[in-house]
Amino acid sequence: MDPLVTRATDPERSRRFAFVPGGGAPFPVARTEGAWLIAPDGRRVLDAAGGAIVSNVGHGRHEVAQAMARALERIDYVVPPFATEERVALVERLLDRWLPPGLTRVMLTSGGSESVDAALRLARQHHVAAGRGGRWKVIGRDLSYHGATLAALAVGGHTKRRAGLEPLLLELPKAPACYCMRCPLGLALPGCGIACVDAVEAAIVREGPESVAAVIAEPVVGSTAGALVPPDAYWPRLAEICRRHGVLLIADEVMTGFGRTGRRFAVEHWGVVPDILVGGKGLTGGYAPMGGVFATDAVLAPLAARGEDVMFYTYGAHPAACAASLAVLDILEREALVERAAARGKQLSARLTAALADHPNVAEVRGLGLLLGVELVRDRATREPFPSEAQLTRKAVGAGLGLGVFFYPGGCGAARDVLVLGPPFTVGDEEIELIADVLPRAIDAAVGRAG
Ligand SMILES: Cc1ncc(COP(=O)(O)O)c(C=O)c1O
Image (tube, rainbow, N blue to C red; front, side, top):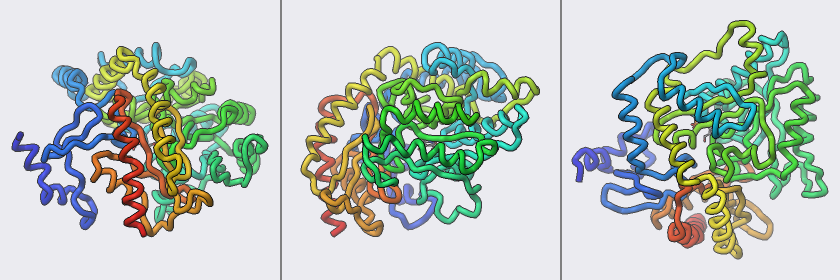
């Protein structure tokens, strides 16, 4: 074995990698390949989460690594506003084949949180430049995650990740997310008339529309509550509400974008084009750190008229990351992987639903495309959750790893125990069978240990 790999993944040395001491050695990975993580001792673990719902074309694609190396051999670094071959080609590719029509402006960053932060800056700058300096509030939703910068945490509703940081976070209004299984408004479809989207409008009105800059939402709520899919009419009505009140709509597609839900972007399921769309993860499929902010001409026009720009991040649009993204988009297109994500998503969802149909601790299997969530509860009939102290999700993830499959830990608040699945779009029949076989056993093991 490669001596560098052996040394770096030695458990004693791995332990030193942890920022906070005492949490045990991190799971050591020596190599990745297809949908698999390979430990230094050769043990193979199926990556049913695609990392943090990142890996879309699968691990170990040599052509991506080679494209990055070729790019770096020519240019290591130039400031983000300068044009390089990979940057220009990537923007052209995004505009020609990927972005919803109307999203014509592209800013490339180095990750999802940074992109959300830049989108918030852009929304504010847009209004200021247009002479509407009173508009600054950004309305988010109470089960959501938009990233770990202080501004992204402020617009998000992930109480666990915000805990203790509140004094540093701007207090911003929140509307309820559409969590139909435990409707925060105590209503049910279809009689509810999708009252949760009307609650966004109520928040705009309550705050005073002339003070509101934007609404930010994940089209399908990701790991916070485990793949919450809104009713079909939610996003069209949300877009209409925002338009009527002069509020920008920001779709955070960091997790859902680039094919994850079976369409290029999740908003396409509902025919909506937001004013600003934020992407990350799938843009490079994990091969390089990069995110993007995509906006309409109308959003940028007031800035352009005043000769202003949006301040870049030093590592934004890095040449190697642009090359990685181009190679990943090539693979997605050539292998029709977005269509495959739709088909494999249905297959995985059907297998999980069947495998967990009578499981006493599974409240719901939900999701869209290859973004799926499984909510765990103490009692399937009453949907009573486990106490937080039971740490059920953590135990289930640990049990899954022991049984050879990695599930992503999610959940917050009432939806506190959630396993999130987001395998690479290349996932095959046998791998889907393995996931469906291991998941109930991992839950059983966790519940047994939870007592
Ligand atoms: C919807 C959403 N937005 C933003 C982020 C933050 O992205 P990053 O972790 O790349 O900064 C995430 C990460 O999970 C996410 O799921």
